[in-house]
Length: 216
Image 1 (tube, one colour):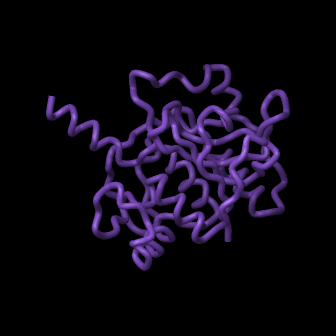
Image 2 (cartoon, rainbow, N blue to C red):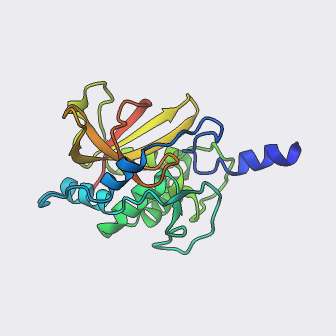
């Protein structure tokens, strides 16, 4: 029993996974096929480029893997076919030559006291700091722009970042794209909550706790 409890704590490093017993398929097989060929746009702005980058990394075969992994620095990444919600954001920004691993580490190193102490760390960790939703929330607010949280879908624009709290305890993050839901009322999100790196109409599926814009 002690081993199981320790293992549960260990896999909670990334802070955006759902419990296995409550996790349900995110998209159907048909939806996954649709996700494989989404529509890109002629990007002129950074936000549009970010949206295209997020769509370009869609891969339903990515296995949700929230374990701690040692990675190189800078430009480190976990194995391509694995990852969590934060890896979607990291990989998307890296497509635009922005290394969040490096950016977050440098800011945390200089401003460690401003970041959460949830994990009991006394110093930075290049392997995991940028892969934790609460750290990204602090970083995006400090280096980007914190935006209004509302239930109005029109407030959520292409290239924005949204963070949620699933079940009142599990942080999650995704990227807003230029694509719209079937009814045209909500922007589609690229994220990973257990069903791979997918495009989904899920803006209001969970409790929104953060809304940000970040770009060079």
